[in-house]
Length: 372
Image: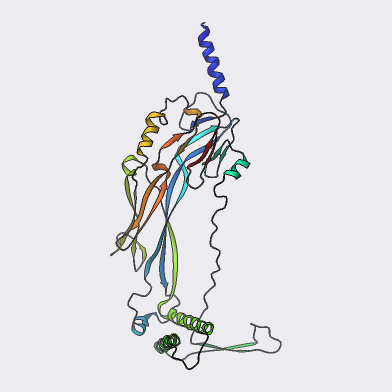
């Protein structure tokens, strides 16, 4: 037997054993089993479209049928409208691109989504290189419950010396005997009086002079009373936010431009069926200029990132470089636009073989730091 093949075999064995990690696509079929390891996936971006709908809830409105007659309300009471649209992204694991890693003597950190967080970095390095250690907290502002107001239920309370505040001995109530129409007319007249009073205060047409602070308090009281009376006619205005999630397709013919229908909308029902009369389609379009087209071509044909015959494929980490895309949510009445990074639109790149340190952005999956 020749000595050269044995030497080459020993040299290859030493080179493989010297490598500090192994990386293999889960779709590959290795001949030798690799005990122990972890999984990571390439990032995939999903677009979140948060649509806020406004609606007048007429459940507690006692005089809704008199709103047009007595308050000259033109719009249909109880209708829906689109108040706001917010565009954002979230990064998930791409199920078609998972890799098995044997770290050996290299530290590898993977988050709960199976996305790469760092390679070759210790905990102290992570803290020093963390770009934004704090996350944005949600709005914790207090939203008080609205006061319940009933204009024609009168309550008389009687306290004794032994009663606690808020717990009277006797509560006597008496219903108003007027018809619903008469009650609605009295409420409409009271709204008119409050509006006249506001105008007098703003124009200074009052016998009493008020300080700026006292005038502000009076205007706030008038606004509160008017609002409570108006709710009896048009209902309480409520908002609801619905999230629609879009998975951008990364097929070559769809990267440049793709459009999906989010939902159909009518002012009477809000989110409606496509067959409803007068239903308006709200769409989302994505357009990518492929500014990294030349870079992606270089990665593909010059460094062999996609060639299965590459000898170093099992020993190199892969990552994605996000590509910017113009996202628009639109219909016949509005258009919201924003530029967002889409991971699957960009090229897949191999990291160098051997030892190095790398850190990835948890929000986009992009590589943000690398060093030997």
